[in-house]
Length: 387
Image (cartoon, rainbow, N blue to C red):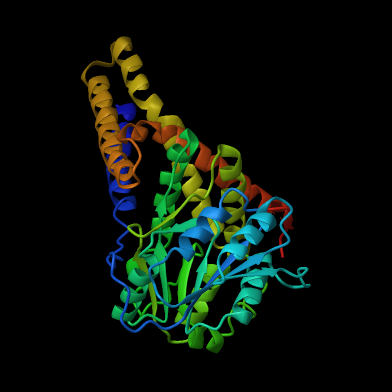
């Protein structure tokens, strides 16, 4: 009887948790394709690039191919050691809208990306600044569409969630779970509510008024922040300006990682920095890791345990346990198949949820361990340690 009661409690909790987790992400504001504006203020697109030989040509060509009529493109080559510099030289020779800056050595007290964007913004002339990561690719109407929605929403800082390009098995297995976890931590509705302090921005694409950027101190104000996008959004919103996060998946896409190795390095870095800078999140991280481990280890074993019990005179209670386990499996697979479809990957990847949850739990536990033991993480050749 105790096994049956335990299984039933898990059955109820599982349905509640699955439903709750998948109903936190409400991107009510959607960027839809729009024509170029009749009156177009100058937009300065600033792209930091450090060893981006695989992405930089596609990224820059997409920005140069915008139908927005009034823009300049500034790329900060952050001391790249691969073919990035040569590719940028080739592109610069073909288009006079493109300005290439060679980044200076990283000063004491600065993090890499804030320093890169600080240098790029220093020469920017636009009324609006648009910060775009080198692994992010704009549709030809992206800037016009974002500008139209920013004006419509009266945003001072407008940021979007981009469409994630997922090519490999591991990207498709792990990334959807990571994105779901992020949606629990950062509710777009709360971010868009001026009465709340919740603030976040997606550094892959940030569109901000130059006057507001200067008013809040720009990247110099947050020069030591590794998670500079969130820090910038906090400076904007907490000083009484309008922050908007929107769904930009129709006009902008991103290829964050291409393999399990690069994904592991990138997300353990991100999780590590979040836990390091906000120790209170360690408890939440522990809960998330525990939940992911339960999904990874217990969920596949649940029906097997019920079946084993049935063959050991478990009777109707064992049958009920199997029913509960299959019901939870069915509900989870249905929900995750919808997520997979929204992320433009085959629905059958929902069946890899336990595997993806195991990898995600391992990344969270690894990051938490490095915080607690004082170890650091490495990202693009730079070492980040506890403050």
